[in-house]
Amino acid sequence: MMFFLALCALASRTKSKPPYPPRPKGLPIIGNALDIDPQRPHLTFAQWGKIHGDIVYARILGQDIIILNSEKTSRILAEGRSAIYSGRYRSPLFKM
Image (cartoon, rainbow, N blue to C red; front, side):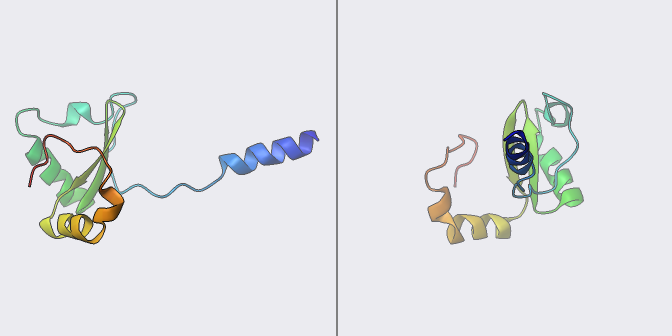
């Protein structure tokens, strides 16, 4: 019985999670909050885009954020997959 429980615990721990997009290294708890210029965050995001690609993942104060650095990628996700994202939280910063 103990062997079975240990095997189940090991199996649940090793389940693969979908990979996140590339991200800049951050600090524990605050993540990338100190890396972003509060006056010009778009410049930081553009710099990350040059290093990590069109889709960048960041964690800021425990909040997962996906940054899209190209219009083409944004349109593909907005138009092609709109049904998937239609019920998601709308950021007040994103207005089209």
